[in-house]
Length: 611
Image 1: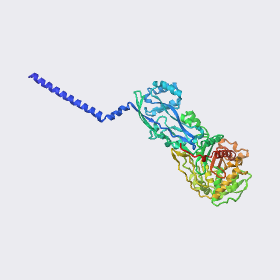
Image 2: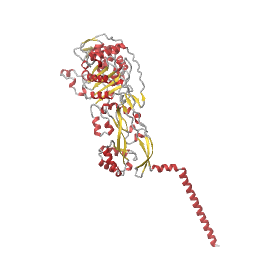
Image 3: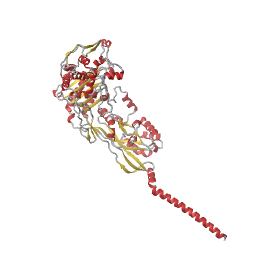
Image 4: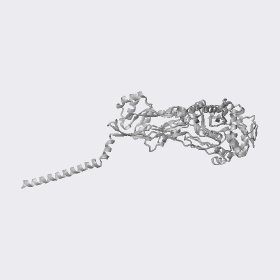
């Protein structure tokens, strides 16, 4: 009996234990089934993350060409050295070992260490790019002993024309915090965006779209194979209106001076054929990486090589403004083209005496001869009749004192003063003497070389309000044809201006006669200007101190605006030589050379093409 009871208890316990085991196994099986069947994809992804790396594929940047298809900005093969901090056992030690194999400047090592502190440890950081084959070979042989280090083949931006096109094309630079966006490319190691010029203005078009590559890696993070790839989309190419050889010629011609700028454009279409600013810089240095010393050398240059003076340089237009004063007088009915003024060498207004540049005087001059001889007294007298507001109104019709929404971003507006402007800006009353000074392009008036080129275009193209532009094609898409509105000004008045500009260069009494082109097939017209920077007072004049005796930064600016051909105007130019002295002696010869070269090359007959 006792044994039977014990057996029943034992069997009951065995049954309960078995039941519990069955329940446990059933629950475990159900859990396994749930994890494997219903949540299998989730854990598959988690497992794959341990063995699959997603790599961003940097797209090729769109290239830039001139109107003939000559490359101005291209991409060349580039090998880059990178490091992933979390894979490096000791970042300092690894960098030290790398520097024993290839030359790495201290500033590059410091930069990597700074970035490693700021960025996520799994993000790769560029150590050096543009590696030579010898450097690549040395690193590849020792790569197994350099944890976290890898070499990536990419592209480096190259500018074949170097300094000649730097202010137009611009350069690329690393992304800073203020420029960061949601685009994943912005966080890619070594990724660069446009900082100036066309590279900046059309950065989104040129940048393209990134792709991705999924790589299977081993436990050390080394690539085993590529699983799949989503191709990157190359950026759009651009074709500019620039004639690269005319651009190079212009830049070289300006380089004979310490600081200068020039524009050549089509007076009918507004296409810019050349835009140069000197001194310049080599944008390839920015692609390769500037050291702190190199950067400081550029920044400390007193002639400001990074500034595009043709767009952002603001200067008194001086006597190149006299065409505007003449038009304001003719169009307002204050003077006729044949009315004369007698120049004695000065003009008396109340108690103030305003001197003409020719102290002995020009005698009797009218609208045409006053332009040819650049007689100041003629414009002094005109201005007292016309008034500053009428002069300002005419100046704005011809493009002065405004921005053109140009393709480059560093354009300045200049300044055309009025009575209201002075009251609002300076809280002062406008004085008659200020109108007299403004009539010859001095005083408060400021203009850029680009504005002077636009002004000249509108004066000689029949009075059409042309505006400048640079980009002919974006990818395969051609820029829209531009139809320019007619300015409300009489053709007879414009003809007076053209005759005066003709005589400036081609008449013996003209201020630029020394720069006349002897071959009549290439004759050109224009207007000289000499902008006073520092007034030489009576005491200094008595001591014989002249402009050339002053410190460079106080000397006059030399200006010239010109057009060609003489009988059927098409091309215009503006030239400004900072602190260069006389416009007739310094700027006019440059303009002559530019107009001659432009007429020989005939850039308007080279049809721009997409590449």
